[in-house]
Length: 413
Image 1 (tube, rainbow, N blue to C red):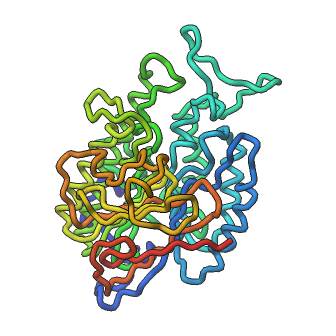
Image 2: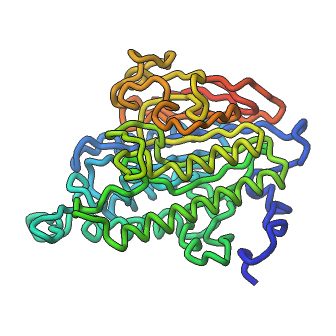
Image 3: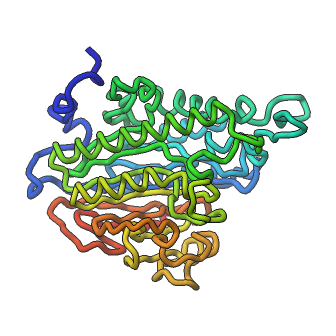
């Protein structure tokens, strides 16, 4: 019998809890743990800029030298939107990641699959009624399968998620949607990248939510309308994500979790395009609304701290976009110390200068037990966020700590 067909109680941690980072069931004696969070790294400014790629091994070595770390989380984008999508590059990143001495939990970003169709990434464009794919002087396609997003996602899965239920780096057992999908929706078995596990009584869950493209609804290759393949991709993945998130919150409640950490790539509150707040999908935010609604509802029902990590917009920021006027800090320039968010400190590249991300999606949310952190990325200095989970802590919802969580930025190089 498939694990996916068993009752939910059977899917909960038993002896596997220790293997996935869990331990005793008493929060008072559950040990602290610390993880690093990174994203949008390494980045290049052009197809030939490999400076950050070459610096990545030293960055990995620096994290390996941090004896506190028990895992590293990567929130997606393993290259920039100005670099080509190639199998050779993906395998080179996998080779670099093999040096991690702790488990690496990775969720894909848009640049390594959803946006590979774009001209800047070596894909192609819609010309004279047909898609014209970019090629080099020898006639070879610049990007894998001409930048086809579905093919590139499959490539990412084959390289970074070759064994369902195992992480990169020092392999750790995790619960994968590929193994524990709802049998009523067999297509969900494809989402090997969606996982959950527990550490220090906190449940961590990853979701494949690409940023920069309104949940992959920017029409591929700039064609007049979305293809059937694109429409199916968005529908299937969005539904699988929502079912996986629901399963994760159920598991959190059943296991007595004291908090939940959501890991995804998209900045679902970043005004990187025109925002009209309507169902026609004219913004780069509306495509995320069903998931944001679910996060808000699930967090409210859970009633304990929920922390969300995303990349995508690259600028370190911590706020609560589900409650208006919540405390917010941001780095006003790359690598700078975070300061209080204001109309002058928020860069135009981070929400078009908006102070309160709640204003970007004003749908009446009021969720006090939520906080999100945008991970610094894409520019030097390379840094990681050091997240400590202390089951005995219960901090107010602030910009440096919340519930069992506390965090600080580390610039090791």
